[in-house]
Length: 114
Length: 111
Image (cartoon, rainbow over all chains, first blue to last red; front, side, top):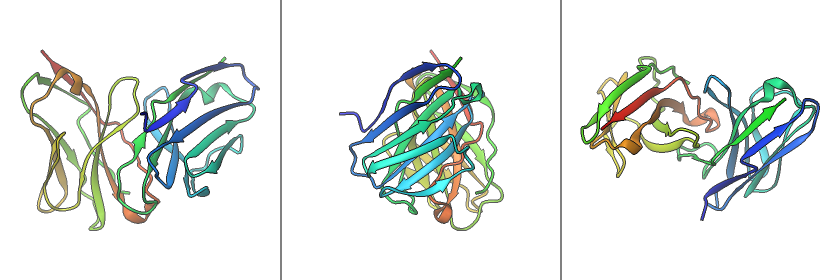
């Protein structure tokens, strides 16, 4: 069974559209994250949720809105997509929000905005 | 979080040990050293972490110098599937558990 899954794997859309990426983890973890990897391959944290509550928001534009219906899911909704939003988005999860446990990453969603 | 410095790339022969260095001269006493890797087109994968003592697991060994200003990740018998970008990250427990990735070391294992 996949530990951290994301859908879709690929997403191609036009500027101005609104899209969502879904993430689910079956590890029983209480903290989930969204990272963005740009064309230069730098990975940066966007959001972190612990038990459905936002604990990290790294100066991400308001067009990005994470939603956590339960602690096993963290979805990312993006409004008014821009060309610069093209990237690979990774979801991750870990067990303890302020602890030192490792993070498990999903396979990524490659978003292309045209 | 402390900044880390890694060589941008290195080659390794299949079956040989790969030694990946990382400098973190400004590391604080409560910062841990983490290693992750990212195989092409996949999500990052946790390898190992440590605070002061050397650590070993089924994937690798982590050697941390006594002054904790540098560390080395050792892949004991590199295989072609170990070709990836390896990231050394130092992190404070109070930082909300986020990982701050640098440029990493691109390791190419050659037959």
